Amino acid sequence: MTIYEGKDYKDLSKKAAEIIAAEIRINPGAVLGLATGSTPEGVYEQLVEWYEAGELDFSKVTSINLDEYKGLDGSHEQSYRHFMYQHFFDHVNIKKNRTFVPDGTEMNSEKACMEYEEIITQNGGIDLQILGLGANGHIGFNEPGEVFIPETHCVKLTQNTIDANSRFFESREEVPKEAYSMGIRGILQAKKIILMAVGKQKAQALYDALYGGISPEVPASILQLHPHVAVFADGEALTVV
Ligand code: GLP
Image (tube, rainbow, N blue to C red):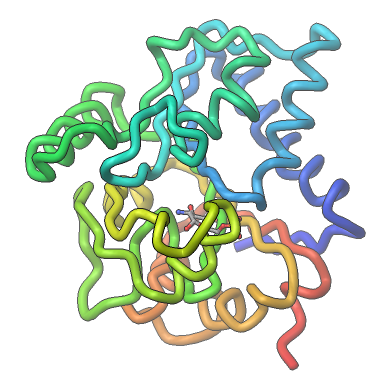
């Protein structure tokens, strides 16, 4: 595991974006596992900048996102599909039919999850996975629990996550209580993984993920078993007080 401490957010975002850019140049048909949340926004901004400068081509790239709120349509402002359009897909030449996000409008959880597993398998898994980190150690929406759940599943969001994500909604009540999330197998089978963490509110979770025991109570700790993880964090996230 490599840990890069960024001078600031822009710097660590650029470094993480460089890895993605290199992946696409080496493998133009790469399957990227993408994440939402405020942490990777700087990475998308940097990739868009390079695309606009004619330095990157996404025309053969496939993307498979980690998660989506159950019950939200892709046109809902807080849906993760909408986030991806707003921050990335609308600004680069990725083919929209090569961008996959779990179907939040499918209320049959079993069907939604099975279909997403098929998408992951049909595309041969993920070449490079980008991950943010929940303050409770979650990755995607794999919340702390008693077991690691391997496949795409419907998650009952923890109060901690609902509170953290309520900043994007008008009120806490509006935050969906459930989400579809890629499971730990889909994530761990990625060939390479980038884990990003910014700010002191992530420090304990990052410390537990990197140096604590491997436990489903800290879902990100499973990354210790992966041979190619690069961590991009700022000083605050790397300092436990
Ligand atoms: C959400 C997402 C995660 C994300 C996490 C952290 O719950 N499901 O994929 O990593 O929040 O978000 P942020 O980067 O905004 O702190």
